Amino acid sequence: MGMRVTPQALNTMDERNLWDDPIRRYVLPAAADREPVWHTHPEARRDSLRETEMSVVEGLVWRYPTKALIELAASCPLYCGHCTRMDLVGPDVPAVTKRRLGLRLNERLDGIFSFLAATPSIRDVVISGGDISNVSPELLEAFVTRLLAISHIRSFRLATKAVVALPQYFFQDSVLRTLERIARRARSANVDMAVHTHSNHVASITPLVCEAAARLYDVGIPVIRNQGVLMRTINDSAAALLDLCFALLDACRITPYYFYQCDMIPHGEHWRISLHQAQQIQSEIMGYLPGFATPRIVCDVPCLGKRWVHQAESYDRVLGISYWSKNYWTTIDNLDEVAPTQHKYLYFDPIVELPPDGQRYWELKQERDGLVGLAGVGGASNRQPLARAEDHDGHNQKQGPWRIR
Ligand code: SF4
Figure (tube, rainbow, N blue to C red):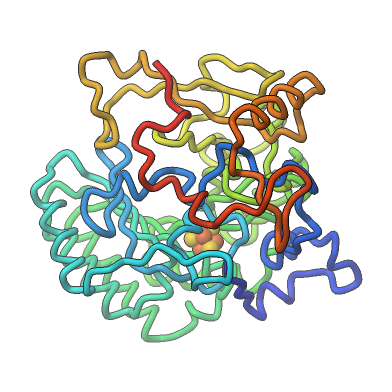
């Protein structure tokens, strides 16, 4: 990821100990933060969720039967090192040329709306990217107006980290008036809407964040929810998550919603925790928050989608491989001769967290397969020569090793 940090985010860091600061650790990542050996899981990809393969038209990702994701912008007010959409979001960096939305905006939007209008099974749309605060209010309003004209769209969500990373954006009159009109139109059309934001640590929740949330509620936004990412050394304890959730609820009226397991991205192993650790944290936070505000910790399984961490069908804790299934087909599947539930999709724990037998398995597998996922940062690792950045993209891997029958 490129780096972009707002003054708001800088001001939430502890300048006396930046090295250990939880915000710094994902907003200003350092090469020295990374795992020295297994810094990249062999199954990691820049497009870790295979969203490119699941795009039915440019800018529309269709991963679930009734829900679609719109990539309206490819930039954010602040960049997270762990970004799940790192293959698209943000500027090119020396090691990586990013995927680009190639169509002109009008053509892209026409394609998106033609597809949505012709697909009545899609009833819920997430408008994201990127971040909706990085498109003009006029474009956002025009987009939502077209969306509301499709009668089978019953809900939409506006995704923006700006509530937390750039709350001043929502103090602008033009932005607030636009959101007020959007909320009014959604209400008139009897379409549900929400704003979803993204905070990972209680240190992010400042008076300005609360003020931004209050202004959004004042102009008629019905609900603001938070989706965070569960990350090692940043928020991987029940206490850290509960601190954040109570601050969101009590100070800002933002509803805790999801915490995602950090995705399997290159050079992200120092942020990831094992599935069993996530399951333990989920169990420990139960009973403290109101039910509607008790976040679910979810694993976004490649080619499958979000699943609650306790939904794994089986789990080999030594090898760090969990097996999941889905109860529907999507566009990425072309296997209609077999029931969807019979396919298994795989998720992998970080290798550094495995017991010695598990680590040995992956060492031998790497020696045998000559995997490319262990590239060093700014130089060769002590296991493999530096891989080309393109080796991580996996764009053409329709039938990856993550899926078994
Ligand atoms: S706010 Fe979301 S889309 Fe933007 S860089 Fe962070 S994780 Fe990626």
